[in-house]
Image (cartoon, rainbow, N blue to C red):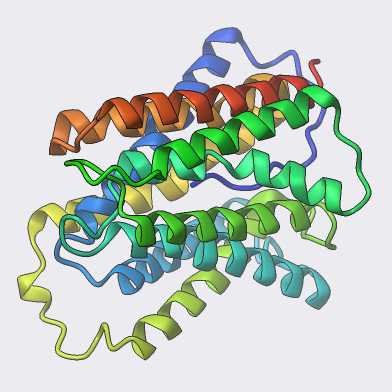
Length: 315
């Protein structure tokens, strides 16, 4: 899952179109592939514990890089900023990402396929619009049209059919709760006293999210009787992929894009990621792609595209 969008700064002349599209392609493919990576990791790993390890290690690596490049004071921020970043990290990584990991774990017929999870998470821009409306903002009529269309697609996607490939309702609702948590975190991130540097904020977010995920993993008994020898190489590689490419490379590319590309272009990840996730899930692990999934997903993506194109200022 992606990180909340910080305020964008003016586009600089140093960014060539080739660099912009390279970074955008990284965000498209790598973030879209993390849903499949999660599914493979939890095949033989405890879900919340593996997510905790992912963010703890990624946070340590990022902190080390900042410390080496910027000196001892690289992570120095106020206590108030640390508290704000920690809250956002809990909402985004523990609530948002952690619940997606949880929903993708479990036996066939109970776990949510990775492509479906990505389609459900694509409703985040729609939920943010609703949060804005609840706090007095007045989005335009086209924005509300996109929200309505997107949620109609969500209903269509999870509508029980009783046939093969039907979306597990409980798992789907879990992902919707995850998307809501992510949306609240994204919404609050621009309204709380956060560290000015988004990379520094990410370090504290990752540490806080990892800590809460670890607490819940222990509470659920995930570490009781854990046999690391039973974890498959396939799951280890998936976890490493999530740490390196999902949490470090793709996020770095995303932050760079926010400073070098029009935000309307950067925001297109919201409706490209689900397409990548559904395609990879079908090709690599034979996840079912029914007519209902195609139609519901297309409606959701269309609604999100309408919201993104009408809400994001072009520059």
